[in-house]
Length: 522
Image (cartoon, rainbow, N blue to C red; front, top):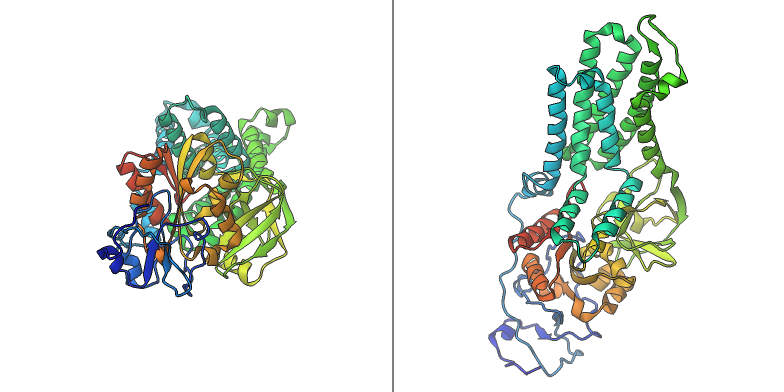
C-alpha cells in the first residue's frame, strides 16, 4: 500500500491514536477501555466525544484504530481516515415503546395482515347478521373456534418449523425470482399479525354467538351459555394482556395471563363442545353420543388446537448446562447436541415460569450454545447465579435467521449480542454466500474468546468488524448500503435494538435494497 502523508490533517486530529490497516493477528486485540457496554444491542458510546467524532469508512479489509502505546510499534505505512458525520443520536423523548408502536410504520406488513384478518371476519359477520350468510349465523361459535385454531397455528413452533422448512426447500433455488422470496420472508416474519387479528375476531364471533343464543334461549341451556361467557371473559383477558403497552412494560404479566388464561379457556372449550353436542333442546336434557360428537366440526377443531398446544410441552427436557461469563455482562450457555444453522431455542429455570428465546450457536455436531446479554432479571441471574440445569424445548423453532437459507448472497448486520443468531452460518458448512457486519463495544472483553475465534476464522474479505470503543458510533445504515453494493448481495438481515433495526431497514429500502429486521411481535 502506498504511503500517505503522515502529517495529514485527518491523522493530526487524533492525537492519541495511530491508524493503520488491520492484520489478522491484531483484529481481536483486547480493548483497553475499562468501561463496559450497558446494553449489548445498543450503540451508545460512553467514551470521549473525540471517539464519537472519528468515523471510518470501512471496506472488506476492516480498518481498526488502536490506542497509542509505547510498546505498540505501528507498521511503516499509514492510511488517511476520512472524516464522516456521526450517525444521528436517538430523538429526544424517543423510547423503545414509540419505535414499537408507531415509528416502525403505520402500515407495516404485520399491521396489514392484522387488518386483513379482521376485515375478512368482519365481512363474514356482517353477512351473517344481515341474513346473507345463514351458515355463519347458525354456527357463529364454530367461526370463533376456527379463528382460535388459526391463531394457534400462527404461533405453534412445530407447525411453523415445517412451514419454514418447506418455504426454504421450495423457494431457496436460484431460478426463483427474488421478489417472491422477499414477499414470502415478509409474510412469514409477520404471521403475528394474523395471530392478533384472529384473536380479536374470535372474541367478536363469540359475542355474536352469545347474542344469538340469548335471543333463542330455547336452543341452548344455562350451562352452555355460562361456559361460553367464561370463555369470552378469558379470551378478553388474554387479549388485553397481549396489548403492546402491557406486553412491553410488564412482559411477565403478559406471559402469565396469556398462557394460563389460554389454557383455562381451552379446558372450558372442551366442556362447551361436549355440552353442545349432548344437549337435546326438545327434552332440555343431555344425552351424549359418540357418533353425534364425532360429527361436530368444533370437536375436531378443538382436538387439533389441543394437540398443537400440547406438542411443544411434550418436548420439554431438563438438561445439564455449562455457563461461562467473560465480563459479567453476558453469559455463554452450552448444551449437548448439535443444531442446524438458523434455529432458535427457548430456556427457562422452571417449565411453568417465563421462557426466554435466544439464537443458537452450533457447529452442527456435538453441542450448541446461546449467548445471553445480561440486560434483564433472568439473564443477569445466569451471570450472578449460574444454574447447573435449565429447562429447554427439544423442538427448536425457526425465525427470520432461518430464512437466510432461502437466498444466495446475504449481508447480515448485527449489533452487540445480536451476532449470536448468525454465528452458526459462519462455523457450519453453508452454501449461502454470507457477508458479516458486526458493530459492538469491547468485543473480546464482553463476548469472550470463543466468539472472537469464530469471527476471526471467517474470511477477511467477507466481514466488517467495528469496535465502537476505537471507531466511535458508526453510520450503520450507510455502512450496510455500501457493503451491499460492494458485495452484490440480494438482501440484508439485521439484528439490533428496535431503533437500530428500523434505521438499517429504512436506509436499505430507501436505496432499493430488500432488508428485514426483528419486529416487536416476531
